[in-house]
Length: 318
Ligand SMILES: Nc1ncnc2c1ncn2[C@@H]1O[C@H](COP(=O)(O)OP(=O)(O)OP(=O)(O)O)[C@@H](O)[C@H]1O
Image 1 (cartoon, rainbow, N blue to C red):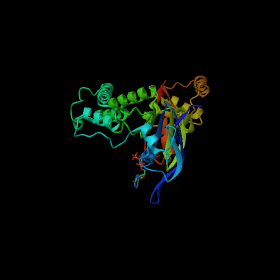
Image 2: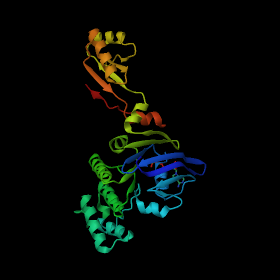
Image 3: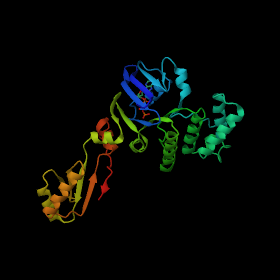
Image 4: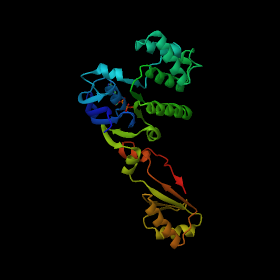
């Protein structure tokens, strides 16, 4: 079995009479990306704070980097890096000075600190801006500097709390690339996000946090199989063909305005072939056939309290 970078059991945390974490278990294998998904206020940041020793849990145990959180928080701190929603970047000093400050905090000898800072600034495409005050950086540059600062101490485990919130699509993709490179280098990434696509793109395993509990956990594919929602949609331009199809497909729901039919389907090869055979033998010609398979949005809406939020499903047109 792969060694676990993070292993937590029965973590609980309440603020007053509000239970934020109601006994959560986590297992994150070394060198993987784990995404903790959840709606606003679900307790994602609280989980990160506990696992990174910033606050203590009311109950439960956890080992991070092989060290017990309660017995050996110093060793945990030495093994991890944390980039939170409130960045460690000091806007009044330059990017380079921020990096050198981190190198000092990690007690790196001066020449070593300068070398590491220069290397990381280069790696995160910040060399040109290195001598400018960090307050003049864009949101994406600040996030990159924040991660670069986290890497000064060469952590094996990195907690990224909503690393791409508020970033434009290009900066988000750059951040994803950075995260992938970290993992290729053997780092374990514990990520919180509200972006389902982000979890889908990056995470080896995903846990959905809701009402203080892990509502579901698995790979993106496993989670997608948990929810119904797969269907085939047929669109017609000929009202007669539409009506005939409606009569011969009893499980279909129709929209008379747009002349479309929605047929529940797991979108397996067998189900699709059966449907296509049926259309062929009954002589029904649809103008368009689209297949919808459940995506992480479906999972999220099915498992969390936000089911009322409308969303646009992703569709593959055939
Ligand atoms: N120090 C605190 N004192 C009291 N309540 C707190 C404290 N910290 C967090 N909470 C509450 O705990 C709940 C979970 O907060 P947390 O920040 O962990 O959620 P989150 O999932 O990270 O949300 P978001 O996506 O909005 O960042 C919220 O209801 C929050 O108001």
